[in-house]
Image: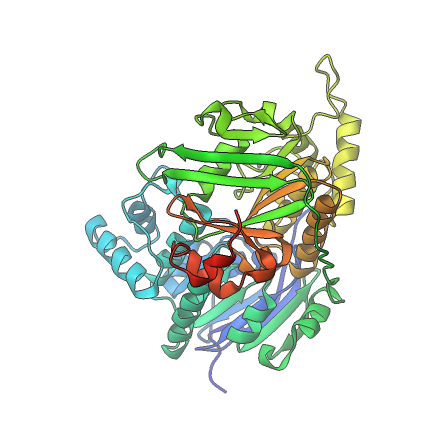
Length: 508
C-alpha cells in the first residue's frame, strides 16, 4: 500500500457538556476522496478543525505524509498543504473578496496578482465571483464560492470540505465534482463532509461513519444504498415524507409588481416581482444564489421597509412600509439563511434567543419570566432533537445543523399564519431534514401559508405545491409541482422561462 497522506490514531476531544471525538482513527490515501458521514453533532466538524489546527486535540496522534505532526494553528496546516472550507465561513465582512483571499495565502503575491488569480480560478471552475466586492454584500452561496476559491488557490495536498454543496445549484454541484475529480487525479486528497447521501455515493471512494463522537463503520459508498448509509449514520432510515395534495385557501401573502432599487452597489434590483401564497400551500422559490433572493426576503420580512405600502400585503393588510415587528403581529415568522448573527445571537443562550421573535414569556408590563422562557426552549430542544447543553447553552456552542433545527423549531412552534424560510435544511442531516420537511407540511396542512426559498431543487420538489424561479431580480410565472421538472427549473434559473416551450404549463 502507498503511504497514507493523513493518518489519525485515537484522536480525542472533550468539552464540558460533550465528548466531541472519542478515540477517532482514520486513514486517507493520496488521491482519495474520503467522506466523513454522521448526523448533526456526531463530531465531524470538530475532527476537521483538529486536522486544520483550529482546535487542539486532548490526545491522539496525527501523521501527515508519513511524518508525525502537531498542527498548532491553521497557518501551520496551510504550510503542510492542508486547506479547509468551513461550513460557517471565516471571512471578514468589511474586506473585499480579494483582500480576504490574500489573508489566507503566503503573502508572496500582491493584491493585484491575487485578484487576477481569483478571476482565473473562478472561471476555470465555474464559480463566478467579483474579487472587488465587499464580503458583506455577498449572499451565503457567493461567500461559499469565495471559501472554495481561496482553498483551491493554495494548491493543497489535502482539501477539507465541510458541507460544500449546501447552497449550490445542481449545475454548480456537477462543476464542483468535476473540479474535485480533477484534483484527485493530480494526487490531492479530499476529506468531504456532507449529509447528501447520493453525493457521497457518486463522488467518494471511502466513507468513515461517525456516531456520538466515535467511528462506527468504514465502507465503500458506491457499494451502499442511501438506506444502508442512513442506518449506519442514525441507526435507522429516515421517515418517508407523506406529501398530500393541498387545497389552497385565501391569499395570505401577496406581492404586487414590487420593484426596488438595490440598496448598495453590489445588491440586486428587484424588477416587477409578483407572487401570492395562499393558506394551506407551500410556494417554493428556486434560483442561483445572488439573483435577488436576499433582497426579496428582506422586503417581505420587513428588514427592508422601502417598498410602497400597498405592494406587499399580509392577510389583506398593506405592510410594505411596516417594520418586521408589526408584520410578526399579523402572524408572519421568518427564518433567514444566516444562522449566526441574524437567526440567532451567538453569545446569547438558546432561551434568550427566543426573545428575538417570541414574546410569550414577556408580560404586558415588559417583565420576562426566565422559567417560562427556559421551558419553551427546552420544549423546542426535545421536539426537534437538538443536541445542546440545555436551554442555557450559548447559540454559538451548537453545531450548524443543530442550531438550524433550533431556529426552525422556534418559528414553527409559534404556529404562524405565514412562515417564510430561506434554506430550511442547510447543513442538516437526513433524519433532521426529514423532520423539518414533515413539520413544514404539517403547518401547511393546518392552514399556514409557507414560502420556501432554497437552492436545493430536490427539497423544493419535495415540499412545494407551486414553484417560481428568481433570476436577475425577476420572478418567473408559477408552475405546479406536478408538471415541473428539475431540468425545466434548472433552465428557468438562467432566466429562460419566457422562451421555454414548457412555460405554457405555467399558471399565475
